Image (cartoon, rainbow, N blue to C red):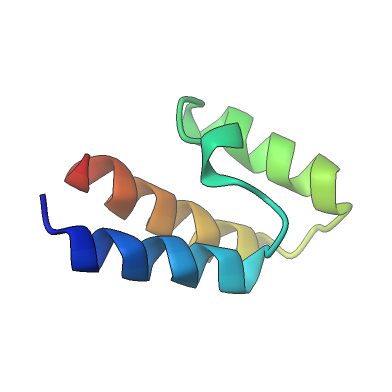
Length: 63
Protein backbone atom coordinates (compact mmCIF):
# COMPACT_ATOMS: atom_id res chain seq x y z
CA UNK A 1 0.00 0.00 0.00
CA UNK A 2 1.28 3.44 -0.87
CA UNK A 3 0.71 5.32 2.38
CA UNK A 4 1.61 8.70 0.87
CA UNK A 5 -0.95 8.25 -1.90
CA UNK A 6 -3.58 7.10 0.58
CA UNK A 7 -3.03 10.14 2.81
CA UNK A 8 -3.26 12.45 -0.19
CA UNK A 9 -6.53 10.87 -1.33
CA UNK A 10 -8.03 11.18 2.15
CA UNK A 11 -6.99 14.83 2.32
CA UNK A 12 -8.47 15.42 -1.13
CA UNK A 13 -11.76 13.82 -0.06
CA UNK A 14 -11.85 16.00 3.06
CA UNK A 15 -11.26 19.10 0.94
CA UNK A 16 -14.58 18.41 -0.79
CA UNK A 17 -16.71 17.44 2.22
CA UNK A 18 -14.54 18.37 5.17
CA UNK A 19 -16.70 16.92 7.93
CA UNK A 20 -17.68 13.69 6.20
CA UNK A 21 -15.56 10.72 7.11
CA UNK A 22 -14.82 8.34 4.27
CA UNK A 23 -15.71 5.58 6.70
CA UNK A 24 -19.36 6.71 6.59
CA UNK A 25 -19.60 5.71 2.93
CA UNK A 26 -16.69 3.40 2.11
CA UNK A 27 -18.70 0.20 2.63
CA UNK A 28 -21.77 1.43 0.74
CA UNK A 29 -22.47 0.80 -2.93
CA UNK A 30 -22.33 3.84 -5.20
CA UNK A 31 -26.10 4.54 -5.16
CA UNK A 32 -26.37 4.27 -1.38
CA UNK A 33 -23.25 6.41 -0.89
CA UNK A 34 -24.63 9.06 -3.26
CA UNK A 35 -27.87 9.17 -1.31
CA UNK A 36 -26.10 9.36 2.05
CA UNK A 37 -23.77 12.19 0.99
CA UNK A 38 -26.66 14.07 -0.59
CA UNK A 39 -28.74 13.78 2.59
CA UNK A 40 -25.92 14.59 5.00
CA UNK A 41 -24.89 17.72 3.10
CA UNK A 42 -28.32 18.60 1.76
CA UNK A 43 -26.85 19.00 -1.70
CA UNK A 44 -27.89 18.04 -5.18
CA UNK A 45 -24.47 18.90 -6.60
CA UNK A 46 -24.02 15.56 -8.33
CA UNK A 47 -20.66 16.56 -9.81
CA UNK A 48 -19.19 17.26 -6.36
CA UNK A 49 -20.66 14.03 -4.97
CA UNK A 50 -19.35 12.06 -7.95
CA UNK A 51 -15.88 13.55 -7.50
CA UNK A 52 -15.91 12.68 -3.79
CA UNK A 53 -17.05 9.10 -4.45
CA UNK A 54 -14.45 8.69 -7.20
CA UNK A 55 -11.81 9.49 -4.58
CA UNK A 56 -13.42 7.03 -2.16
CA UNK A 57 -13.22 4.39 -4.92
CA UNK A 58 -9.52 5.17 -5.35
CA UNK A 59 -9.03 4.75 -1.59
CA UNK A 60 -10.86 1.41 -1.68
CA UNK A 61 -8.50 0.24 -4.42
CA UNK A 62 -5.48 1.02 -2.23
CA UNK A 63 -6.64 -0.70 0.94
